[in-house]
Structures are given as structure tokens and as C-alpha cells.
Length: 255
Image 1 (cartoon, one colour):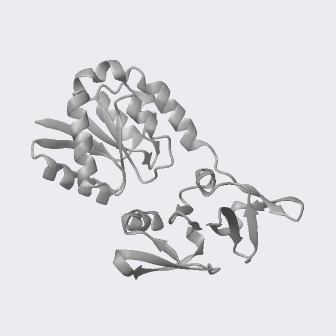
Image 2: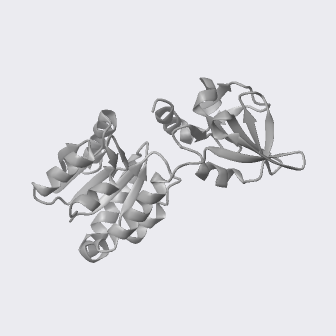
Image 3: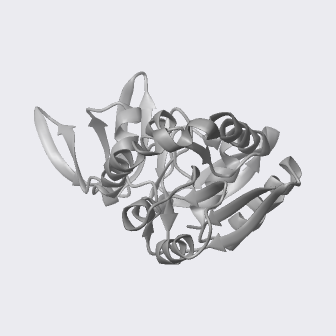
């Protein structure tokens, strides 16, 4: 029997993960579901070690990385997160996997397979884990930009990030569109800009658009199980959420 714990602060996410694990392997037993950093630390210090754990990165009282700073974690961990802009490749080098939310059965099964393959070598790899997690914790906790320099006439002016309704790339030029219906040229790629914006406020809808939650008035079903957004101010092109990102978008929208 594989003994597993889940550290996650959303009830529905816990239920979903338990159901998927049961479908993948009935020998997997979830022996505890913990919802905070402090609860996880207390449980780890007062219970026998488990085979594997699933840690959501963002918990109600902090980041799950803090668990490693407060107590010794002797078991491998698969991190779960709704956002992929964090430096997730760093988990790989320490034999620690990650799964993007919404969690898919195939990807979860791959993580289980990876654990089984690497468990013989986990102890030596785990010694390198804490420095990496501290680095990632600092990266995630770094403040996102509050002001953006935009081109105007022959120079630049500062504009508050909160003033932007959406960002759009057109003919390789990135534009920032404000709630006041102003349009500015942004001297950044859309990919670089995405990393500077708070993921709780802005969503990468597709390759062309990043949209503010405050601009979204409605999300309607569209052809082939996609969503089309109704925003204010309006865009000159339709903003389509792909089928692959619909579940992630819905989860983000209610956070």
C-alpha cells in the first residue's frame, strides 16, 4: 500500500485529487488531508513518514515551501499549482515533480510513475531541496509590478498596472489598453510582461491577449467548447479561451 498525504486548502481540489488517485491505483491510501502550513508541520512531526505527498503551493497561511523550513520532510513531494509561470523546472532537478491545476489523470499518473522510478534515490536528492525551495519562495513572493513605463511621443510615461484592462500583441507590437480607453505601446514581449503581472489579477487568455479580471463582464460558450470573453472596454478582436484552458480560467475567475 502506498501511503499519501495531501496538503491543500480547497475542499473540492482535495476531493478531486483523492478520486483521481483512487482511479489510478486502488492501493494508494490518502491517510491525511491538511489545509495549512502549520497543520502540515504539526502532522509531519507527530506521525510516521509517508511514501508520497501532494502539496499545493499557495495555502491559506502561506506557501507550502515554508513547511520545509519549519520541519524535516523525509518523503518526496509532488507540488500542485494553478499557475505555470513559476520556475517549475527547478523541482525536476531535485526529483520533485509538479502538476498544473486543474489536475488531469494522465499527468497525475505520470507523477506516480516518476515517484516509483526515483524513490530509491530520493534521500540523496532531497539534500539539495531546501536551497531550491527557498529560491522559489523568494521568486513567488517578489512583488509584481505596480507601474509600467509606456511609450508616449518621444519618451515614456508611467502608468499604473491597475489602469490596464488588457494587453494585446498585434504584428509583433504589444499594446496596453486601459480602462480609460487609452492605448499605449509596451516595450516588452507578451511573455515577459506576463511574468511581471500578478496572476491573481491577470490571465493569459491565449497567445495574443492577457486580460484583467476587472475587465471581464461575461464569459460565453463558444464553438468547440471554448469561451469567448465580453470585456470593457471592448477589444477590436475576439478574446477566445481555448478548450485546454477553460477549466483553468474558470478556477482563476472565482479566486
